Amino acid sequence: MRPAFPKKTSPWFWLLLKLSVVLSLTCIVLFASSPNAMKIIVYDDPSHTRSSSTTLPTPDSDESDSPHPGHFSTLLANVNNSLLHSVQQQCTDSQRQTIRSQLPPQACEEDKGKYGGRRCSFSLATRCSDAIWFAEFWKEAAQRGVNRPTAIYVGCNKGMDAVNTLRMISENPEFDKSVWQKEILSNVLSRNQTIVPGACNQENAPQFDISTLQGTARTASDSTASVFCIEAMPQTANQLNRSSHQLGWQNSFVVTNAAISSTDGVALFPSGQAGQKIGVEHMGLGDCLRQSTKHLCAEVQQYTLDTYFDKFLRKDSWIDFLSIDVEGYDWDVLMSASKALERVKYLEFEFHRVGSWQQHSLKSAIDHLDTKGFVCYWAGAHGHIWRITNCWMEYYNRKVWSNVACVDPWSAPALATRMELMFQETLAAGDQIKYVPK
Ligand SMILES: *[C@@H]1O[C@H](CO)[C@@H](O)[C@H](O)[C@H]1NC(C)=O
Ligand SMILES: *[C@@H]1O[C@H](CO)[C@@H](O)[C@H](O)[C@H]1NC(C)=O
Ligand SMILES: *[C@@H]1O[C@H](CO)[C@@H](O)[C@H](O)[C@H]1NC(C)=O
Image 1 (tube, rainbow, N blue to C red):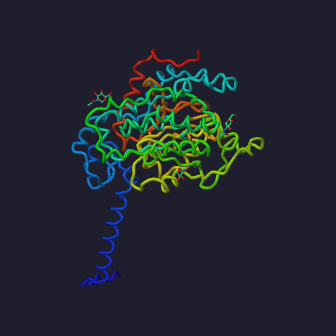
Image 2 (cartoon, rainbow, N blue to C red):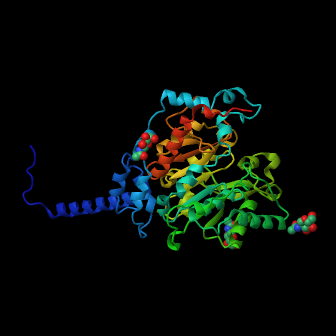
Image 3 (cartoon, protein in one colour):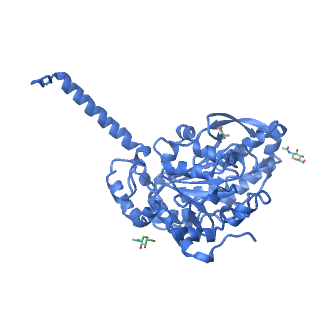
């Protein structure tokens, strides 16, 4: 027999009810204010998710700073829902056919060993990616409403790309590649070190043209852009840090000497004699595992990307741009990032035949990023870009030096729109695009 419901509700009932209401409200507030929670919202209808999040730090106007009037409406003008939908679609057979004709599989499958796969189409197409979609997207007035734009370079190298990105997102002409290069060079020469040229001629590539920016300039209050430059090689990090301080850029160009990998701890990294060459791109963690070169190594702090974010970044900040270039250990960096990736709008990484890629497939990285909401593309030059997510091909597992760019369509719908449009334009060019060995 069921006990009769008490006629008079006990005071405990009300106390418990109040407590549970308070608790659930707290949960809602906590949940809603973390970038993490916001990723869960599907990006079917960006106008809906944005208008419903008036009390939240939305990705494109983080913080509670004065919002930019009209910001969302201009932003949404660059978002095309039909393109955002198509990133979730599997490639059609005819799209696959076009991709295979533009990025032919033959050279990837055939020349095992001999050329290290460098004749493979997607390596030819992407090894020196120019990421013009990002620069073009950043020029649009709408994007420039972003407060405190932030970029992270894991594997900062000589800092050339990082300085150029700082120039772009800060819109401050003071950040200048030639000024940076001169500073680095004078530091290096005074210490009898040498600079090794970048594999993609980053030193001589033109820098971001600020005069092409649209709309009104940033005001001083919202131009607090930062680039976090993480470099594992002690000598190189030291030079970067010294140059940043000497130029008075240290608040915007923040250098950390650390390795980012799958665990927190200490890593061995080339230093001493080996470190006299600033910007050596092919030396990495692997060289310190070999007995013959081990004595040239020093201990360096190692963090997962999650730990680095916790330690060095503002808790509520979005990352507009994340570059990972760690000589074959990119997979470990990606896998070390779980919570961190939920705050990232756009990222680039290198696929390789060296480092930990020897044990891991590109597919596993693409799948991991897919679970974090990212859509990935082969990142070519001249606006040539091919979606990998939902358009997977077996031959993409051929391990060759190549570059991948991924965007989160929820937190960066305008950029995702632009990238998907570039993909469709690349396909529309048909036979005019073909990457085959000479
Ligand atoms: C969105 O993109 C599709 C496909 O490229 C295009 O046909 C359509 O006109 C675009 N819509 C708007 C409003 O720009
Ligand atoms: C750099 O090399 C020159 C010539 O070999 C030498 O005279 C000088 O002492 C060196 N400077 C330093 C800082 O090691
Ligand atoms: C960078 O230089 C500053 C000032 O000289 C110093 O306090 C800081 O510890 C250095 N950081 C790194 C990563 O070397």
